[in-house]
Image (cartoon, rainbow, N blue to C red; front, side, top):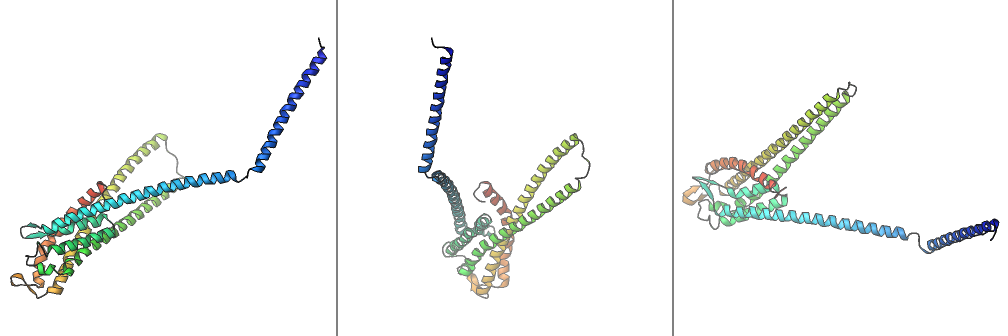
Length: 315
């Protein structure tokens, strides 16, 4: 049996050999790591990261472009659908006039007025041009036997006022909406300034109890909801007024320019049944129809426009 000292010496040697093997393995791993770092470019990982980032960015950009293109395509489909609907109504009203006794309403201008409230300028102008052309064709076909057909067979009398309806209605609606927007922004900014000033003035005042603060916060929440409802109601009423005023101005534009061009080209001219075109004849011809059209179109246009916006067929 070996002595105790021999056993201790053998154990110590075994531990030292294990330590040496562990250190040698660690050193070999370190040398391999250094060798790999020398042979592998340091920018490889950065390049892979940049490539992955660019791929992600391009993918997100392509997705955004697809979403934008789809929204534009959907918007174009809505505009074309609305334009086709209004054109169909215009054709019906042009070839099938609506009469109430001796009063004949020019309902063929109503789709153009409505479209000018919700569409872009190009769409409104296209609608005005198409309405003028359709109406011009009607005076050579179904309305050729009318005593005033020779007057409306003139393109300046028949087509140009219809185009001006779209232009005037669009810019009237656009300008009034801009004015209403800036007035609302100015009122909001003034309110925020007054509230901030009141808050700064009350910073040095004493704090009230917690129960009273909670009660005030609840009251403020109720007041805020009530103010939001009132603001929405004011905006709806403002838009209705803008649509009604724009429609009335479109009727005025149509009647005014038709009367001006009629007197300019046909003043003193004898038409059917030995009727001479004079200022009195034009005033009597347009007087009653003009009043009825202004009132009726101003009342009809706002509900139709709000219905189109509620159905998301217009902005």
